[in-house]
Amino acid sequence: MINRFPHTATIKLETVGEGKLPEVTKEEITLKGRYEPEKGNKNLDYKAKFYCEQTPEQLKSNPHAFDDQKMDIFGRSITIKQAWPYQTHCELWLD
Image (cartoon, rainbow, N blue to C red; front, side):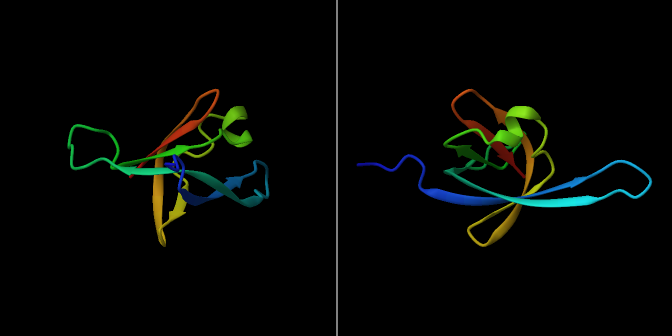
């Protein structure tokens, strides 16, 4: 049987609080999904996609929570250009 979501990625989410002394909060989120490179198409806005098996709670409350954050997969750190949350899954466009 084919495993639709064979890859695991870790997103390092960093948020900065507001106020006189801004507080930086760091959080790691592990996602199970499928990594797909874009195969050299120069007309696309991304270099690869990561399809998440489920939409994380952080994306449900703030669709831009993962934008410009780092994702670790295959021993590399990749920047997330944009996140697209859907009801059943999410899509991350990678740079």
